[in-house]
Each structure stands twice: as structure tokens, then as C-alpha cells.
Amino acid sequence: MSLKSFAIYGRPLEPSATSLLRRLFEQIGSYGAEVLVHTDFAAHMRQCHGYEPNIDGLFEHSDDLRRRAQVMLSLGGDGTYLSAASLAGPAGIPVLGINFGTLGFLANVAVAEMPQALVQLMQGHYRVEPRSLVEVRPDGDDLFAPFPYALNELTVQKGTASSMVRIAAYVNGEPLCTYRADGLIVATPTGSTAYSLGAGGPIMSPDLSALVLSPVAPHNLTFRPLVLPDTSELRLEVDSRDRQVMLSLDSRHFSSPTPLALSVRRAPFTLGVVCVRGASFFKSLRGKLLWGADKRD
Image (cartoon, rainbow, N blue to C red):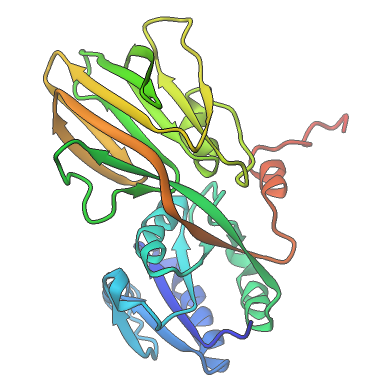
């Protein structure tokens, strides 16, 4: 598909990235494509990089993008990508991540590969992989409005350094267990290589239809990560002695009093992750986790 419009989202970048930003906008401009830039990122380029590219408009919310952009470019690391997803998802726009950050499972295009990746986009040599999200709804509350969804994970964590959290979990109305732990992660396959992995959860191929529940420092050593079909309806009833817990949906953080009840299910839409030619999940695993780095291989 021939691309005629881009949305560009980014977090603050180091001054050394100025030349890369110039190259990006000049290359897109040479194709005659329409360019929309997030308001905060445009201000950052002007104030910190002394650069004001020729653009066709600004956007701040998802509604500003509908029918105006075909692909969003996320400039940063995976945290930036997750923020970009919260804007692109509701607008039905796929996202390509250009990695100005560190690890980069989602932002899987290195800055050195950026010019060629843009060429591939313009030539139609890319694919869009649908990724599932989770939807989280607190009982009688709009705590996560206007975007109660997460591409990577929901986390429920203790509110202080001393008090553990108590989470009674139900699957399709049936009691599962009561976690007494520092927290609980409900991750999508995409999020299985993020916080859940650090908590001992399994790596899942992103095309699976599954969720993984990974307890954080459980006080019962028999609790282990559990993989469920993403058709499951989860209910989490949360309590804590200090009457406060911390919640996160991807990179967005919230504080809530307890007791608290959450309904968790697969979101009714997917996010399109743009992959240029040569990119794959298994290639990322080999490169990011150094699989195959053993000299015996």
C-alpha cells in the first residue's frame, strides 16, 4: 500500500539526535507525504534541538489522527512505543518503532536502519501484525479513562515498601487462588518479554491468544506464572493493610485506595505493529537476549 501520510510521536531525545531527526523529516518530505507531529514532541524539537521541520499539522489526541494518518512512527524506546500505542490504537493506526532507546522489542528498527526502513514503507515492503491488548475496568470507577487498555500488561503492586498486597483471583467466575505478594502482573503475549519476564514468566509468541498471570515475589513459593486463554474473564479483588495500591497499564501509573475490584479481559480491538522486511519476533529474541551468542553455536 502506498503511504501518503505519517504521524510522528516521540519522547525527549538527546541533543546528539538532531541530525537523525533532520534526516528523518527530510526523507519523508522528499516523498511528498503529509506529516503530523505530536504537539509535545514538536515543542521539544524546537526548544531542545533548535529544529522546526516542515509539517502539515499537529496532533494531541487520537481523534486528531482519524482519517489523517496511515502509519505512526514512534521515536524512542519501548516505553515511547507504549505511549504511542495509546494514541494510535483508538484511531486504528499501526505503529512502527524506531529505536532511540535501549532494548527495543517493540521499537525494533535501529536508528542506523531508519533510512532503509522508510524506503521499505514507501515501497509497501512491510506487514502489519495484529497484537492483542487487555481491557481493565474497576468496579464503579473510571480510574483508567479515557484509555483503559494495555498492550503489555496490567500490574497491581503494593503501595509501600513494607505491606504486601492480597489479590483474590477468579477465572470465569471460578476461584483461582489468593495471591499474597508484592504484586501481580497480567501480561499479553506482547508483554511477555517485559516486566512479566523479569518476574519469571514465560516468553510467548505474540500471535498467541493467551494471557499470563505472573506473581511478583509471592509469599507462597508454590505460586507460579499461569498461562490462560485470552477468552478468559478475570476478576481481581485487591486489598492491602495500608489501604493503598499502585496500578499500571503499560507506562501509565495510578494510585488507588483498597479494597478494589478489577475486571480484566481481552480488548475488543488490536493494535497493528508495523514490521519491515527482515524483522521478526524470533530475530529480536536472538538479538536482544543474545541467544546464539555462545561460541559453541
